[in-house]
Structures are given as C-alpha cells and as structure tokens.
Length: 79
Image 1: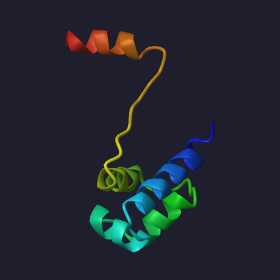
Image 2: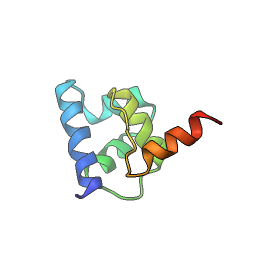
Image 3: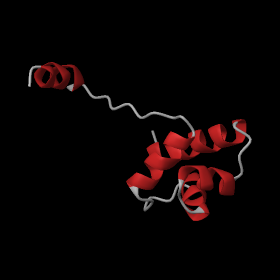
C-alpha cells in the first residue's frame, strides 16, 4: 500500500465533502496553502506537525497498528 497516496486521497475526499477549498482548509488548519497542496499531491517532505494540523481540521484521526500493539498497550498500562 502506498501510504502517502492513501493519505492524499483521504485528505482530498474529506476536504471536498466539507466543501472547502485548499486555501480555506489551510486557514482553518493554521498552515500555508502550499502545505495542503503538497499533501494532496503526495509530496514526501511535508512536516508531520503540518499534516497533523490538516488532519485535525478535517476531523481525521490517526491510528497506529502493528502485531505488537496489544503487548505494547498491556506493558504501558501498568507503567
């Protein structure tokens, strides 16, 4: 799976469903219009913090999954 293209597609879909232009999404997210453009074009050098801001503005959450996540959660619940 190409995660960058998948992220790009999800951002475009949510932005359009919300009726937002790239500029209006950027304003809501507190980033430059170029950041939204770059995310949607699959640019690999966008800062993670900027991606997070755009995802928050679109009410998209990130979930981390791996074969070890259950073990990680169990070990860190007891810390």
